[in-house]
Length: 121
Image (cartoon, rainbow, N blue to C red; front, side):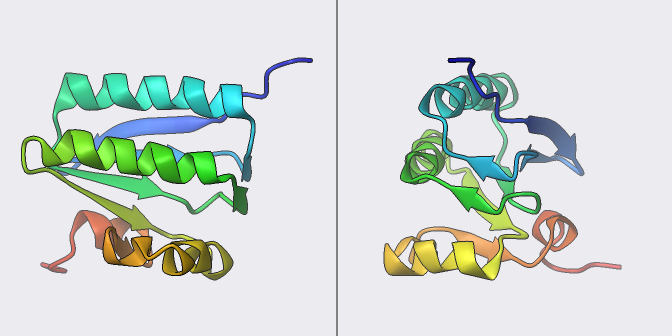
């Protein structure tokens, strides 16, 4: 069985780290593990004070993704960094509410509002 790769794009925008998930479905255990390794390396190399997980392209994900988000959050908290989520589908946001993770992560309607939450012009 061929491994299904999860597309991720890691960038620094206005001194904020952004991890954009590019795959509509994130369910393959091996692919999530591989993506997790890439994200952890990105965090280690950049030590961002704020990291945004951009879910704009995502329509479905497994619970393993929640574990990934919590793991990255713990890594950033070690040096007072924060993890927020942008552009998540309302149906997927329900998963965070059901698990009470909506109280753990901040949510923004789109990437730009997460990058610049104060909305300075």
